[in-house]
Amino acid sequence: MTARVGVVTFPGSLDDRDTARAVARAGAEAVPLWHGDRGLRGVDAVILPGGFSYGDYLRCGAIARFAPVMADLIPAARAGLPVLGICNGFQILCEAHLLPGALIRNAGLRFVDRDVTLRIERTTTPWTGCYEGDQEITVVLKSGEGCYLADSATLAGMADRGQVVARYRGASPNGSVDEIAAVASEEGNVVGIMPHPEHAIDPLTGPGADGLGFFASIVSVLVNS
Image 1 (spheres, rainbow, N blue to C red):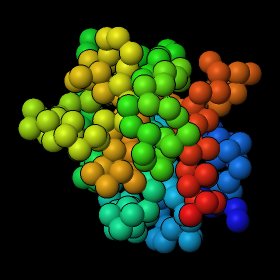
Image 2 (image 1 turned 180 degrees about the vertical axis):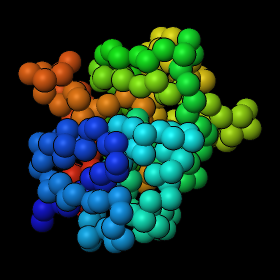
Image 3 (image 1 turned 60 degrees about the vertical axis):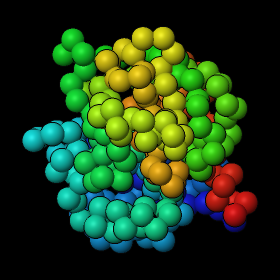
Image 4 (image 1 turned 45 degrees about the vertical axis):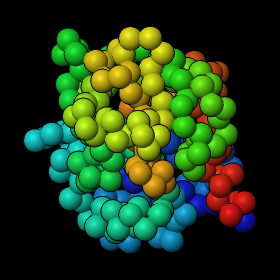
């Protein structure tokens, strides 16, 4: 069986090709999905890549959340379809209420572009099963509105349900509360991550291959299900 993973392209997406390359490197078929089309082309999972969808007008992800493709993606995700949002994709998933919390301007109001170390805290999502608990990985952070926030009640509920997927090691580079770098839905099938695992799949083009685990994890789940 060949897993088919959809990669959505919005106006302003920057990392859709990098994401498709990561999917292929992990052994799956990357299926392009266009923001203006209805239907998900029968894919087994979907990734919303990084970039500046619709120019980040209003709020990051606020317009993309209403794109035609999202009319099919949102109910599919609520029904259990594995979905990963990276950077801008994370913002879109929060705007679509598929993930808790919100992403706002970085502390210091500066764009952050550097390698960061994350600690993986949840390995039971379809996107993190190839990692060990508390494993530290190095990936690439590049965002201006990557500060994750949620109210205290939401954070307490997330902690009780194990929805924090990864945290920054040490102080958060963007001001995210509790050093949160990645979160999951209550069911665990939807994951959002602010740093870019697709830029860390090969030492030739990134800081290493630590990010490949996100893509290898979903492929392993799909081919063995």
